[in-house]
Structures are given as C-alpha cells and as structure tokens.
Image: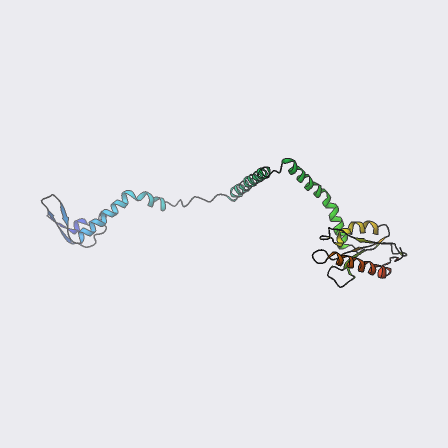
Length: 239
C-alpha cells in the first residue's frame, strides 16, 4: 500500500512540509516499515505527542502568567531573625552556666560576680565625673615633665583661689610596681584642691621598664622638682 505524504499534512502532522511518497510493506511477521522522509516526520510527530500528553502541565505552569511565589515580607523576615537571635542567645547562656557548673564554679560565685558588676555600674557616674574633671578642668596641669625618662611626668591640681601661698601635697600612687599611674590620684587631687591645697601626683617607671632602684630614683627626682618649682604654681615649698 502506498500513501502520499500530502495525506499526512495538516495540524496533526506539523513536521511534514512537502509532499513525498512513502511506502509501507507488510511483512510476514505483521510489522510495518516506514521509509523516506515521512519516517522521520512521523517519529517527530510521536515525540510531540508524548510531550503533549506528559509535558503540557509543566508548560502550562511555566506560561500560566502566575509567576513565582512572592518573597516574604520584610517585617516577617526581621521578626524571624530576632527570634532566631534570641533563641541562640538563650542557648549560649544556658550552656555557659552549665559549663561553669561542671568546672566547679557554683551559682553563688556567679551571683557574686553579677553583684560586683552591678556595683561597678553604680560607681560609674562618679568615675565619669572625675574623668571629666581630670581631662577638661583648667585647674589641672597634666603631664608636667620633671625628668628625661618616658614616665617622668606629674600632674598638678591647683586651687581655684589663687590668693597667697598654698600648702603642697606630693602623692605617689601605688600599683604593685606594675600598674601605678599618676591619674589614679585625680580624685584625691580634686578634693584637696577644693580645700586650697596644691597637689602634685607623680608618675614613675614601672616594671619591666625599670627596676626598684629606677623607681626610687624617679620619685626622688620628682620630689626635688616639685620643691624647686612649686612656687611658680602658687605653692609654698616650706609647707
């Protein structure tokens, strides 16, 4: 049986563009053989038919015009981030307390540490007032040089009343020979300066910058400097 290719034209067979002849021979086993360009056309049609049966739903979804799902709102995302951060903070705090318990640090020591922190927070306003006075008051002369070493400096706290000669106090701060600093005497200098007393707070070399002999040498040199020059600042070297 011979079939003209024009019989395979139309919307059902879009791959056949030109009329061609294709012959079908019936075999003894009942099979059918397709020859010519019509064979490739029919195989292409079968592929399209498969796509039509199984792939139309995906194609319809892709071209339906609905588009992807809208992203979550910013407020919802921010709320989720806050909740996630709070959960992680709680977890870390809980694990930290457990670790301290395993290490032998009991809740009594933890509560004492928290109490110490609260105490430091209560003292903070007073420290801020003293720090402001130390750095911004015109009655404080900071880092007056009295020697040739890097730490040979002193601070002078002068009374607001400049009438007459004032008694003088020389203050040498402690600090286990390693953390001593002249600014530690700022509160003492402020209180004594308000009572018409000139205060000189000495700084000196600490370990490992110097040995105990170097510290004694710096302090002696600072005291001598104050005694020889305090009159220029309104102090009485004899008092």
